[in-house]
Image (cartoon, rainbow, N blue to C red; front, top):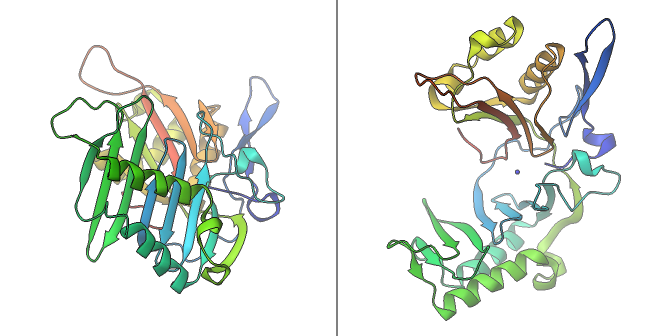
Length: 288
């Protein structure tokens, strides 16, 4: 799910070895270069996480920070901070006062949706919702999908649909619903990650089919192999990407929100699916 201002968080360009003697530069989208200061604090407690549409993310933290973005269906950010570049933009940030954060939480809770977990069938086509609110020591979630046709999804009531529509409207323009005094900083700014989450889908990479430097680098990440994901510092991420580039391995997906590599997969079956190894900027509450 991360914005980079060119002057504040521009991307790294590393040299991937080309055939022969020349090298071609490769631009990894959104990875801050050495010396760029990460957004602080680097960790935080999520109060509200709203995904009212498949292409919208909006998260409020206890310190008042809002990290959000509106994406295209291809996963490209549509909200770009002044001076930034679309290629290098992921989520952006604003900040509420602590009183403003409490006001937002009160408004969301007052919808009545978050008394207990809900799994709602919303009917229609293409609808998808996943909203969460911290209630004391627990996270209450509301999941909504189109035509779920499964017994554990309950048909949404008119009141529930109205509440979900209000949340979507709020996220689309919070300033419309909040007083000026609720804001500590309304300016849309870059969020510069201090950490990245590395994970794989389908299967762990077949290390025997990778260049030795890449293999040695991946062997350092034991949690990745054991659990399927691991949190890396941005410096570690930068070093890994440079190693891939120097080995001539280019990403299959290169966006600020996700850099992915289609690598040979491992497994015991005759047909081994490729390993989708991907790195995404870690938000303050992300854990592996």
